[in-house]
Image (tube, rainbow, N blue to C red; front, side, top):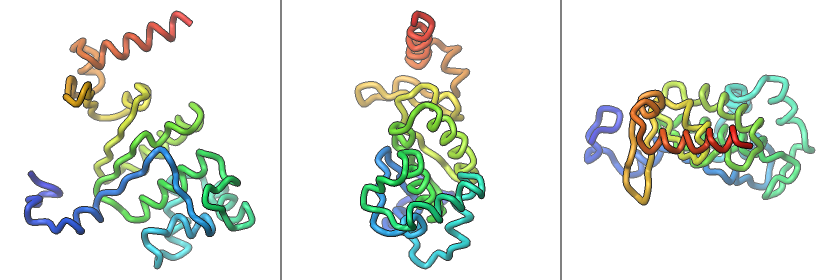
Length: 186
């Protein structure tokens, strides 16, 4: 198996781990400022790098507000930040590491549908130039991806592009149909 064109057996485990970064549905923030939390994986990153990575996710004005707001300091659970803001900080932390593979495990699950849609647009920009693996239960999240793998009871039951899977009528198509039926019946 190859990773970036290199046989995995030839890559040191520590090097491989540095190239893969996970963003989970629970954004863990720590004591300190928003900038401190973004640069957690790269403590030597400058303010300009922190601002630049945040600006790949948010408009510059919002970034300025986020960096300057909340008295500069956050508590461990960062109650001054919304769930969406905490998730943006967590994602920016991951992007500052510039991983080859970005794993998003239900990264939009803890936010409302409007924030989730905005975050998915941000994630599209953040995923450029890297492999992004999205673990999602929301079909709407999966539909925007290049490839969908449906896993049921630990087995792959469907695999392909969204349009192809809908056309083939397999597990993904049945799931989409069930959701559409719920939407139209309500």
